[in-house]
Length: 71
Image (cartoon, rainbow, N blue to C red):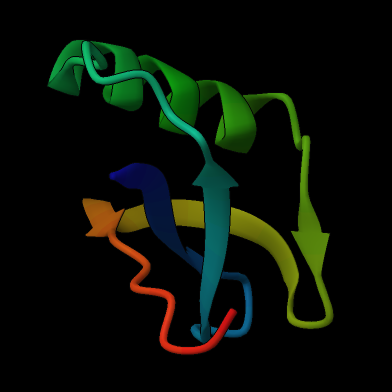
């Protein structure tokens, strides 16, 4: 199953912004996610129409599976 890390931040305007990172490692840890999230905010790696990202709202690991119905 494919795994995606979904990070949700709030920006300067108070709106939520989501960033999806596909094909994340099975062995990713919460400490690694905390470090990544902090780096994204402190280094200003991403911005949004509502300004810079200010705070982590949530982080989720999503698993998806695909079933072919027609080939």
